[in-house]
Image 1 (cartoon, rainbow, N blue to C red):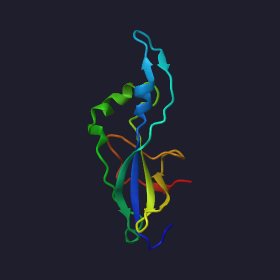
Image 2 (tube, rainbow, N blue to C red; image 1 turned 180 degrees about the vertical axis):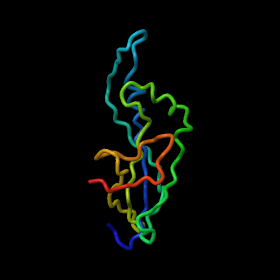
Image 3 (cartoon, rainbow, N blue to C red; image 1 turned 180 degrees about the horizontal axis):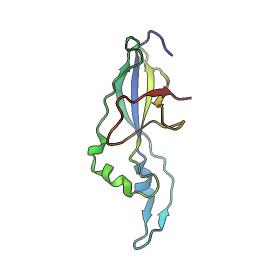
Image 4 (tube, helix red, strand yellow; image 1 turned 135 degrees about the vertical axis):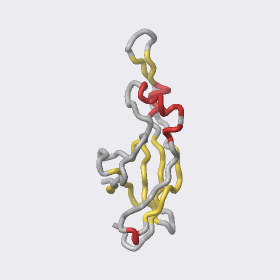
Length: 131
């Protein structure tokens, strides 16, 4: 992809729970869900989480916060629509000028998705470029 160039791996959290928490609620005593408004929440930047070194043949390590320790994480299963805490989107940037070069996602994720927040991840997680 970018032979001979070290790339930064930059992450941001798309917090899926925000819309559910603020815009949807269950009516007391029923399974009806009330909702309204729009969800225009901005992603939370996590900064540089790793570096892709071409000498490692595509292998890299990333360091992410452990969102599973957040008390809100345990309550996401009760949220009506998404039942997930969020997605970490990963972007590759040129190390020298910090120019965005593209995104990566786990191989098994859908076409626009990133790394879902979860209790455990397979070892290794295989990534592919976003198209």
